[in-house]
Structures are given as C-alpha cells and as structure tokens.
Image 1 (cartoon, rainbow, N blue to C red):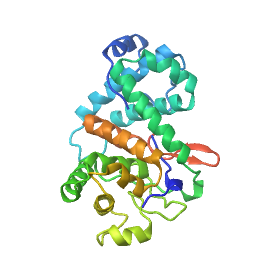
Image 2: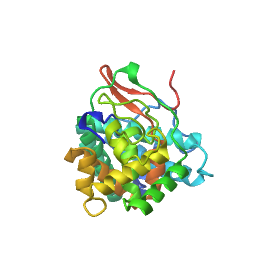
Image 3: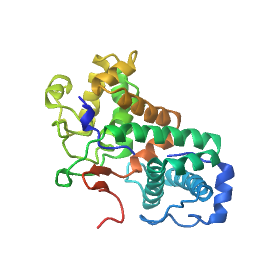
Image 4: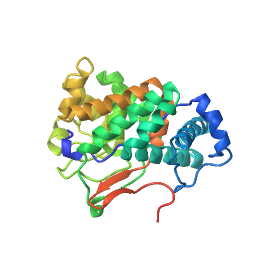
Length: 283
C-alpha cells in the first residue's frame, strides 16, 4: 500500500510534423542520438523543434527495437533520456514552458501538458531520499511486464495501463529498489502488512508477484468500477490518483508511450538536489 511520503519518481511526446520538419534545420539528431549530457536549447522555438525531433526519432527507434524481450537499444535509451531531460527542464522553468508549449502541434502540446502536470503533481509529494539509501537494478523485460499486466487484468479486471502507471510511478518499472522511509518494498511498493494480506503468498520483490498483488489490492478496493477510489486506497492522495491516471491514459492511447516510459531513467530527489542514478554517462 502506497503512502504519500513514498513517492520518489516522475518522470514523452508525440510527433508534430510541422515542428519536426523545422527541426531538421536545427540539425538536432538527424543522424545520431544525443549524448547523455547533450545541451538542451533554452530558446523556445529551438526547444520546441528539438522536442518534436526527439519524439519522431524516439518513435522510430522504438519501432526498430526488436525483439522487445531484449533491453532497449542504445538509440532508444539516448533519445528517451534527452526527452526526459527536456521535460524535466520544462517542469523546472515555468516561464520557458509557457513560451514553448504553444509552439508545439496540438497533439504534442496536449501530451506535453499532461506530462508536465503529472510530474509536478508527483514531485510535490516526493520527499528527499538519502543518497546512501538509493538502490537500483534492472527492470524486468518490457514484454514480460506487459504480459504480467495483461494477466493481472484478466484475473482482477484492473486495466493493464493503470498497473503499468503504478509500476512506473512507484519504482520506474522496478529500476529503483530502495525501500521507502515508511518501509514499503518492491516494484509496486507495498507495506509489509498490506502485502501479507493481498500479496497472494508471492515475493514482494518479484515483478510478476507484485503486479498481481497490486491488482488484487486495487480490485478489492473497488477497481475497475471505482478506479479513483481504488487508487486513493493505494495512496490516499488525489494528486497521486490524478498523476497515475494521466500516465495510464497516455499508455492506453499509444503503446509506444509505454516503451518510452520504460526507457526513461531514474532521477531521485535527494537533500542535495535531484540526481540521476541510472543510464548512460554516469561515473
């Protein structure tokens, strides 16, 4: 069961043909993915072009990613990281976001606004995590997770995209292995007593067991008929509920969003500021 002081993470986009064509003039990444620390434009027009170009390149790289039982290829990882860093910048600089978003095509603009709202909603709930407490690991393969969400949906009638969104928000699909300050554990972040009741006898640290346990808990709490109520039981915060449903809607509408979120990295809020702890280019 999630608690409001347990959320540590947030953290895509669609193609805009108009901006994407313009972005070719900027020469953003027409031939090679961006380096892990590639600079992000601060000019709104160039930033909108870069965001659109990144979206198109990431989508194409996701299509080329085969088989998806394998980890994301390097180009997917690099485009996804640049995209994530761009959204984090826009989330930190409201004035820049206000000037950039109107320059995006309507579809991309709507997705970007949803992402920025979800990030802001969760970030405000996020307590700092001491660097010494940070533990990371590999996520289960993307296809395996999708199969687990689908199996849980068939058994407990909780939408797969909601389970994926909870998994993303709670642990970046299992990449963040740290227990919360309150003692919650595993990729779906259960308190021990709640896991004992709803975990179906499984291992709280196993991705499949945790997903099934979360589906069991959400179903018992009212899902799918009363989904908001069920998510509020999982974490008693309307802000949390709103953010999870935003991410779920994006993945339900466009499966590529799931693969992009899966390829995003873990940024942790610490007492010394935000810190990226997974992905390329780290010491």
